[in-house]
Amino acid sequence: MTDFQRRSAEINDLLCILNVLNWDARTQMPAGGSGARAQQMATISALAQEKLLDPAYEQAAREVSGDDTENRAAQQALDAISALKRIPAELTRELAILKSEAQDVWARARAASDFGMFAPQLTRMVELNRQLAGALGYEDHPYDALLNLYEPGVRVATLLPLFERLRAHHVPLLQAIQAQPAPRSDFLHAHYPAAGQKRFSLALAQEFGYDTQRGRLDESAHPFEISFTRQDVRITTRFQEDFLPGALFGTLHETGHALYEQGVNPELSRTVLTSDLTGLYAVAGASYGTHESQSRLWENRIGRSKAFWNLHYPQLQVAFPEQLADVDTAAFHRAVNTVQASLIRVEADELTYDLHIMLRVELERALIGGELEVKDLPAAWNARIKADLGLDVPDDAHGVLQDIHWSAGMFGSFPTYTIGNVMASQFYQAAGQQLPELESGLLRGEYTPLREWLTENIYQFGRTYTPHELLKRVTGRGLDPQPYLDYLSGKYGELYGLNTQPNTQKEQTP
Image 1: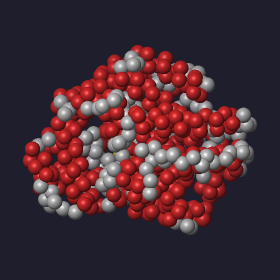
Image 2: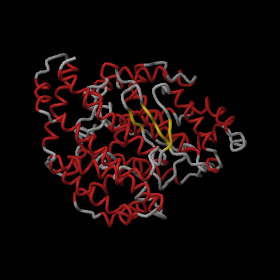
Image 3: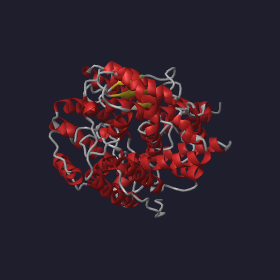
Image 4: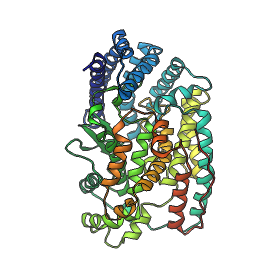
């Protein structure tokens, strides 16, 4: 092991320890532990940053002269060192402390549906992220600096045209669907005991290939996946006993993330290529959007498909015989693919989901840019929900407090969900072109060929390639929403009996 590899491994170990502390705080830790936990996480973050900024580590990275993978790791380390040198150590420490405290306050505020409880922490979080953007540097908008932390290469100037194109497609399709009779879905709100939901959801995750010898499923206020190397990749979900799809599809969503982390080449363990060094976070995906592409692919392209439920619905009926006694497979498939404006992002259908993302991006961009004050955020949120989805927000828990991201300081991360949707369709299209038997195999519940193709082409590389490089390697082009738009038009045209013609416009978003 070279000096660079040894030092990189120690940094990765510290980041994995941070993940353990974070997982415990969000799943097991008593509420009284939040203050001490914030200090513990700040200490570990400071140690990781100290090792990263050690001149000896920079020198070790500069001396690397190995194969392409090792050279890429060294360059990523040097890029992270350059970025972190621009961030004051006190800002890093204050952000680490605030993130831990703010997540605890957010959870209590959400439970009480009281934005006022959380507003002071959010105000400070916005201030610190403005400072972070200034330290990192940007040309056009401070939000660009934060976007780059999660999706390298994306800027406001490239993001807005993508959103405009999606909105131009989604809104007319949504209006056409709303003119049709809504399918029956009352049975989704029957009583489904949490224990039964957990057994069934975990069984489906294992069908996809989630290795429970290297992972586990727990409960949290907000579903998430987190890894402590590829040998320990954990997922959580949120069980609602009066709404079956929440935990079910939440689990499949997080399973997609977990398959990515579990599929990393073992040789990359404890390296720079499984670490987000700038964000001081152990994560192996090429970017957050690339990671999200896998959660959306497994949750939606597979988990909401007709073929999937033709196979697995009989098992669900066995698990919940009374609740689903008078519901056939077709009715269930239509119900879990119902397009209906809703308040909660993580429960939104595929079509309206992007509208939720666009709302958040616009608001957080305005917060970081100083065009919107935190005290005005609930009113702005509620107004956008009314304008975009025609809904009235009854309380803060169903509105501005529903997501954990701002309490975790993740400004700039929301666009990656929609970018992930776009990537998912591109990757799935490429898989279908290279695996002629893919669709027929999925009809039989054969998920291994798809998972292995994704592992070979995406998962195994960790952070070796940039998201743009990975897209070009796998699909032959950059970010292109057309496959995604065609998929949505075809799927919902069939479900709702619409005469939808795919848009053949070929336009790429750089």
